Amino acid sequence: MKDIDNVLSPELGVAKTTKFSAVYPILNKWMLDNLDIQDSRVGKTKELLDFKTMLTNPYNRCVGGFGRDINIFFLLAEAMWIFNGKKDVHFLALFNKKMSDFSDDGKTFHAPYGFRLRHWGVRAEDTFLEENMNVAQGHDQIADAVKILNENSDSRQVVLQIWNPDFDLGAKTKDTPCNDTVMLKVRKGKLITTIQNRSNDLHWGLPTNIFQFSFLTELFANCIGVELGTQTHNSQSLHIYEWNDTAEKMKDAFEDRLFEEDHAKESTHPELYEVSHSQKMDFNFEHEVPGNRLREVDIHLNLIIDNLTKLAAGETASLTELQSVLKFSKYLYLAYNLCAIYLQYKSNMSDGMVDKDSLRIRAIKQIESFSYIAGGNSDTLDIVVLAKNFFASRLTNYTHEYLGKL
Image 1 (cartoon, one colour):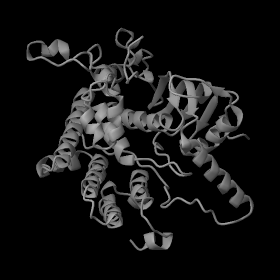
Image 2 (tube, one colour):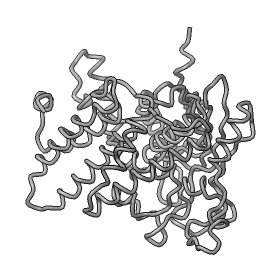
Image 3 (spheres, rainbow, N blue to C red):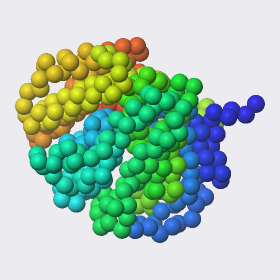
């Protein structure tokens, strides 16, 4: 019988898989080999219209390998920032300085997803004023979605908007939202998520979006006491930019792997550390009411963001606040520590005389010292492995035997 849970048919415009990383390099190769060049605003592309990517196990949110280097620290920081409804450039730029390029004023983004979801109807560029704070906060779509699905899990009316025609249609901005609508349903005790996307880069957009929305909906699902079901991304324009060398590097690495497997040779493109599993988030909620659970999530994400900001500024993080995070969620506490290790690494790298490899080795050891926090097989947990790979792949000279001795 055909495996209906793992289907890739670019001709029919669909990928259905338990793990996006399994179809990612295949889809990349097919698009490069079969699509014509299409002009766009920022360069020529290979474009696939109306493509559906369905994940049957959204907990498998991490991708990597075949020359695709993923900054897991940025992904974690951004996902927490989004759910918390933030809009500032500063925090994201700590993990990816290129994010500043997408801001019109260098301070805020025009269409930050989380801010649109948590403060609908308010321009991100506007300043909240004390005298009209209640109005200026806007509409919290996430809070309403929690309430609706808790009261009626069969509801078909939870549609969350990111694209706002009043702000976006014809706007001259560096930050036009690509993901525009999120639809949520609960069926058989699982959260079904569908994201409508107007413009999706295969390498910079889709893998990031998969991570973002899986992370966000897992937080959401835990508030209402359900698990993740399927996550579907409907990309009206899935494309690869001609000038993005990631696509060719991935194709070459993938073809080399296929050749080596066909000829029973040892692969020259192994993962530095193998990702073997994902792990569900844990939460020690103090409240049974879903709305109050949402507030607990918000409070602890805010503590994480505040303390990471302090570390980046050379200040001392609050031990009391971090202990609160640890008590609430070991997964989120691990996410905090991975991001903190990255910020420490970046700070130390600013010293021109430092031995960069020694900093990378130290970071790998620090990651391993914190990996136990999540419990289970934490040494092969996806976010831990990608964090170690980030540093290991940047070592000037390394061998797998050497890495095994770390």
